[in-house]
Structures are given as structure tokens and as C-alpha cells.
Image (cartoon, rainbow, N blue to C red; front, side, top):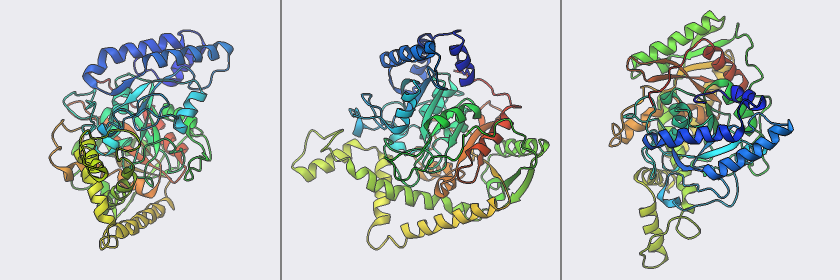
Length: 480
């Protein structure tokens, strides 16, 4: 069943060509066979998955299966799952078992989807490589010497390697789209508020958003429709206005697609530039109009993003103190010393770096100079997007400046690592939807991703465009 699309699996399950338990066992066997090398899963829920598959089969036999009934999925390990370890890839939560499910998990269980396990990520979703994980440092299934991207690298690698039919990730500054680009799969970051964040362990609350990673735009639409919606437990959620797949297969003739010139300048790998511009030509041949536009604030998106996200992280991660749950130091002289030692021992270097940056930016005397300016720049970036969407239906950009880099290549250079997000963070700053899909491969066979950005709540439009391209594009299988 490797890399089988959800619609095909649905048909086989409904026609009784395969049973839900048999299908689940096939995926578990693939995980057992390959994940020792890939390290995409932190926790594999074999027993729970088989029980869920039995329940799904009963529903299928009754003839009232939903879209995802019996479909084996994976979930990023910063999304709470009742009774299942949820670590955020951190020593700080090495033993945390939530007493409740995130809203997205409730929605998947309502359809009797099968949860195979929890996938690795950069610690607390802070990173672009999945190498800051305390537990599993995931590899890229196209080249095991390279990173899968981050922070949702475990989910993207598992989908690419056929270790699940689809997966959930979270995206704060590109954490669904960048690993999807590196691993040659499709991933969508929905509009802020389209999917409930209840049960997502917070990194930066005004930027975080849960979304699907799958083998195609059509599969992403199916999963997104299942998890989206307004949630009374999340005051920022507003749901979606229409089905994410409502425009699939419709003609794109006459649509105006913007190409911001700042995304195609110095620093972009020539092979990526050529592939994305070739994709633009493909859209033009389909009848779309390609329009060159400008986003002059793009160079400032990285500092704005890291100031805002780190400031929010310094607040959100204050809850991890060794008192209520998670890791606690074994040696301490009083309460204050216990908190200090717990955080020093429990958090990794990257998490500490961002907490320090955020605390500094919010401190007296620096708030106006740093955080306030970042917030003002956020509004400017929103206005620039709005100006483009006055005349265009979508924006086409590269997802990354470079293909997947080698493991260890950027670990000693945080600035170079942060710059890997230059093409993705502006979307989160503006709260817009964006989808990555594969548009080519390098000479060495590494995937190249392009991003399609849309107006708020235009997931149907950007998935339509991604699907239109995918229909004429042949993906290559990974080496694993």
C-alpha cells in the first residue's frame, strides 16, 4: 500500500478488497521494516491502532464509513493524544501522557481513522531540520544523509516513505511546507483559525496552525475537511467557509497568479528557480495569467518572525517548571533552584536560545525597540499581501532557497538555519493559507517544492492550483 492515495484506499476498503485491520498491519509492517533507519516515529501505537482498525471495520461493514474511516494516519508529537505519550521531542515532556485529545484528534476519531503513532519533530517545533529532537533525529527518505526539514520532519518523512497514508503537522513559520518540500510530498498550512489549536502544545500562539501532509493536494483536502471547523475551546478558531476540495478539477483558465520578484533573486538555488519558473509556464499553458509583483518587506520577515515567535515562546514555555508535569531535576536546593535546574536540564539548546531571545525582546527598555517594531512590520506585510490579492488570485513562490541540506551542515550556524525559513514565515505572519507541492528534482534526485499562497480562507483555490499541476507531474519514489 506504499504511497497509495486516500481515495484509492477508501475504495478498496469499501469494496472489501482489503480490510481495515489488514491495511493497518501492512503499514505497521512497513514501519517495522524501515523506521529504524528513518526514525520518523517517536511512538508507534500498534495495539491501539489494531483496536481502532477493528472498530473502523465494523463501521465499514455497516455501510456508513466516513472519508477517513479505517485510513492509517500519523500525528506530530506536539498534538495531544489521550493515553498516548506526547513529548514535543523534548526531555522536558519525556513522560507526559495527556488526559485528553486535541480537537483535531477528536475529529479524526469521530471518523474512525486509525492512529499509527506520533512522529518526531524539532524540540517544541523550534527548528528546520528535525535534528533538535531529543528522541529521534529523522532522516530524509530521498537521502538518509540529509535532513527531512522541520519542524514537522517526522510527519513529512513518514508520508514520503509510505509509513502512513497521511499525517498531521503544525506550521509556525513553515514547519509543514518546508519539510514537505524537502521530502517530496504535499502539505498545507491553513488560514489562521481554520483549524482548532486546542490540544496543540503552544510554541507561538498567534502563528501556530495545524495542517495535513499527504501524497497529493486531493488527499490534503480530504484530511483538512475532516479536521477544520470552529471550536468553542479555541477562541481564535473560526472554521472554514467551504470545503477545501470544492474547486478540485475545475478549469484554472483566467486565474491570475503572482510571482513576487523578491523570491527569485540572490540566494536562490538555480535548480529551484528553474523548476518554479517552469511550473509558472505550465500554469500559463493551462490558461492562467502570470503577473510579476513585489513584496519589498520580504527581507525583514525573518527578524520580525523570530522576534514575535520567540517572544510568544518565552511566555508559553514558562509553564514547564518541573512542578505540575514532565521532567524534574533530581538535585535541587529549594524551589527556585529546582526550577532553574529543571529548565537547564530539560530544554535543549535551540529552545533555550529562543526563550532568551524572546525574554530579551519583551524586557523593559527593549520592548519598543524590538517587539513593537516587529508587530508593526507584521501589519506592513499583511498590507503587501492584501495589495497583491486585489488583482491576483494566488501567489507562486519557491518553498525553500535550497534543497535538503546534509545532517550537521548548519547545526553550528543558527543564522544560516533561520534563513532557511525566509520564503515561508511571511505567510504565518499574515495568517494566510499556503500549500507546498513538488515541482521538480535536482540533478542528484532531491525534491524541489513550490508554494501557492492564497487569500484568507481560500484553501479551495490554492488546492485547486496545486492539484492542477500535480495531474501532469510525475513524482519519483524515495530511495528508502
